Length: 286
Image (cartoon, rainbow, N blue to C red; front, side, top):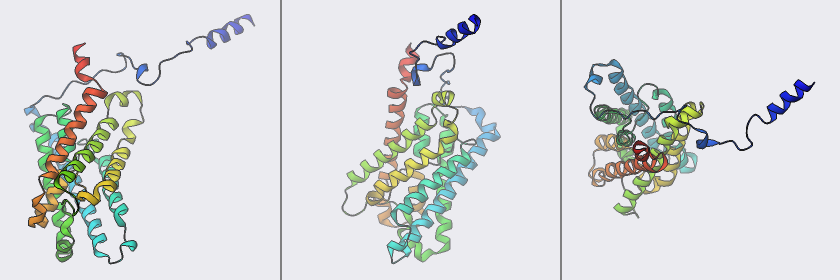
């Protein structure tokens, strides 16, 4: 009996009452910061995984434009807007497709499907410049092809509904549109960084599995907020594909906003996550 009582006593007091939780529980033994990706990596060009990743980005962006612009066209086609999917349905189409496509391609290319996301991850040294440029080119080509296929279905409706092209809507200034694109992309790219954080992945095994969900949900919420302002870009490839296929003057008037805004937002998100949240520069000095 005495032995059992001693075991119970040891069990009850084996750990101190105050145990570190959350990030305080992490130690250098169970996590190491991955090395930054090299700026140039010529060896990638000889790897099939490199080309496969680019093809995955092309197909994903193609499908993204195909589904989302068809949804926008369907909404524009109906005379009774209350009987259509509405703005909420359009937002769900964009967010839902990102959720599905990130889930499908995350293990192949990282599931960027957006030049702004690629740019932000490049600034954080998560991928090489070679891969970043290749991804952006493939994303833009995929977006152009996706919008082109939609136009091929019903050219008249495509032209009359604006082709899903992003423009700054009446009642808003170019500054309003730029600000909406910067903040909207910041929300998206910050969510991407948080959902794919290597330290969180090491600590919480469920994080990599759930990553597509918050990313898709962020896209959904940003669309709800900014569709009335710019139609919501936050993805330069999506804006470029629709503008090229629609190809009307007013679609190009404000097109720079849908490149400058997302790239600024992505850069701010990368800096915030790497410097403020993760404090990477300060760790490297220690």
